[in-house]
Amino acid sequence: MSKVKNNPIMKTLTGTLGRTVYFRMWRGRHIMASMPKRREKLSEKQEKTVSRFKLASAWAKQQMTDPKIKALYQARTNYHYHSAYLVALNDYLHQPEVKGIRTKDEFGSNNNTIFIDVLDDFEVVEVRVMIKDKSGKILESGNAQRADKNPNMWKYTPKAANLLKTGTIIQAIAVDRPGNEGSMEVTMEF
Image 1 (cartoon, rainbow, N blue to C red):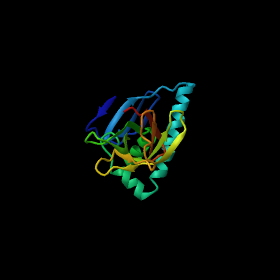
Image 2 (cartoon, one colour):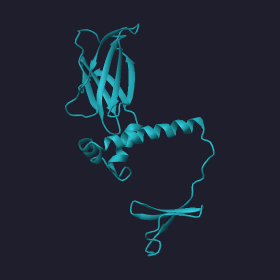
Image 3 (spheres, one colour):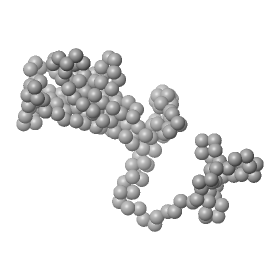
C-alpha cells in the first residue's frame, strides 16, 4: 500500500486506475492499493460470514437512526472504531461472555447470593439465572441485578432458602444490546 503526500494532482483522486490499483481516503490519508482479487465462488464458511456481516450492518444502520442509541455508541469510539456505526457493528458481531459464577462475596464468606462476572465489548443489558437440581430440573429462575460498584458484576439472590448446596447447578446467560447470548453453567461444590 502506498501513501501519497503533498501531491496536488493526487490529492483529490479517488477510484480505480485500470484494473490494477485504486485510490481512496482513509482516516484523512490518501491511499493507493492493489485491486483485490475476487474469487468466483465463495466457500460455505465465507457465505456465512458475508451473511453475518450483512445482518450486522443492517442492525448497526438501524441503531444509528435513534439519536439516543447513536450517542451511546458514539461515546465509545476510539482509534480502531472511529464511528458510532463501527462500534455498533462490532457490538453485533461479538457475544457477551460469562467469566465466572460464585457464591462467595469479596470477603470470602458464603451467603445466599450468586455473583456472576460478565464481559462484553459494549454492554450487557440482562443476565438470566437458572438454578437446577442434579437431574437438570429447574428449581428457580430469574433476572440478576447489576452490582453497585462493578459494571461487569451481577448478583442474584434466590427467593427460596437452601437452594445453594452441593450438586446444585447454576446457569447464567448474559445478553447484550443486540440480543447476543453467552452462558456458563457450574455445579456447586462446598
